[in-house]
Structure formats: C-alpha cells, structure tokens
Image (spheres, helix red, strand yellow):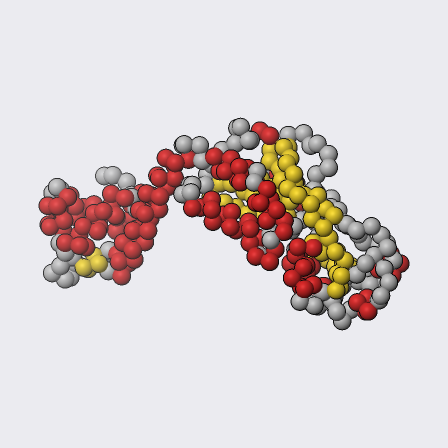
Length: 316
C-alpha cells in the first residue's frame, strides 16, 4: 500500500488541475473523460488529496460534484499558486540572461527620495526581472552597507580616500545652511553666531546608521545638548518645530526658507559643503556587473541624474 501523500506534494499543479476540472464539469465521470483518465483512477486521486490535507474537498451528497468551502478555498489559493509558479519560471529564464535576482541600493540621507523613486519607475519600465531593495542609511552606515555586502550600490557616500575593492565615482557637492525656526531664540540674533553661542542651544543630529562602533558626528560642540533622530526628514521636522538647531542640506531646506518657516543664520566659522559620491564593489562592475547594476551605473553617468539625486528634494 503506497504511503499517503504529504500536504505539500498534494498541492501539485497536476492535482490542482484535476480539482478544477471536476469542479467545472460537475462530475468525476465528465472530468475523467476530459482528462483521459479512468473514473476510478480520478476518484482515487481526489481521495488521496483529501487524505493528505485531512479535509473533504467535494460534497458527495449532491448529484453534482460540489466543492466544499475548503475545496473552494483550495482552488482560489491554488490559482494564485499556479500564477506564482509561472512567474517564477519566467523570472528564472530571464535571470539566466544576466539579470540579478535582486539589487540592493543603500541611499544616504542626502539623496532626494523623489528622484530615487523616479529611477525605480524607469527601471521597472524596462521589464527587468530584478527585484529592487532600498536601504535608508546615514553617514558611514551607507558605505558600510556596501562593504558588508548588504548593498550592491551605495548612493551619497562620503569618501575621501581610496578603499580597496570599492569603486567610487563623484555624485556632486551639497551646500549646507545653519537653519533655525523663526520662533527659536537664535532667529533674532543679528550678528554671525560664534561656537560659544551655538553651544548654549540644543542641536539636532541624525544618528549614524553604522553597526560598527559609534559612527561619526558633524558640527557638534563639546557639552552641547543633542536631540538625536533617525533620518534627515526627522531632523528637518525637529528644526521646523524649534526643538533644536543645526545644519541642513540647502536643497532640502530651501522650500522652507522661502516659505519663512526656517531662518538661515550666518556663522563665524566657515560654511559647510559636503562632497558626495556613489560606489559599488569592484568585483561586480562595471564590466563584471549584472545587467541591473549596469543599468543604474549608466544612469548615474548622466550629470542631470546626479544633480537631481542631490538637489531635487522638493519632489521627495
């Protein structure tokens, strides 16, 4: 006597097709004729499926073969399963042509989300089978994601020195402004602010997303109170509410400056500009890169794309 089928083996594409035929035609005999089977063999297969799942799939008290609620649910779910199997087969065939199954992109807080999503839209429009995974990172965490293998492409890294195994290309420069809310005490100060004056007021800082060590911080004064937030958007919101002060990327802050919701304050120290780059591992490109990474690297060669990633925050 053969061993009973397992629930997983019972949910084969062939078995689901048998159930669909019986349900559609209303009888085991009619389904057997369509499928080219002996009726007893079809009945035996249906009972094997029911035994494996420990449910009744058809109400045998009726003159027609009527699905039970469990049987109807199995057919509904089975249809989605078959569609997914077809999709997997298609993806496998297309991945064999050089497309990566997944491409992970680490985007620093400097990157304009609207432009990043526009690039995603353009990528999906190609019909590529590669799945995209976006990671939000900050400061040294962006590069760390690339070095650790958690990301295939890093946007907005701050790299001044050559790093073995990492290919880096310039993205552009972003000016920063020291901004406060109009109701903050520093908003009414007319002269250029000294470091000592800044130290007396709470700063808002974005947490470094690195998993190693303490990460890095910028422009904090010794002994200064700090409100630490997870993203640049949180930092912007905190400063709009007057919860603290600090530098913001000028492209991100400009709409709020124009609307009078932020006030730019001159400082006695030199102004701040951050150079940003994009990076990928040398063992994956550009010549050895998969087609998905190649697509992104080709787009990043366009000056307008690089500028938009750093400056079009009003679209985010």
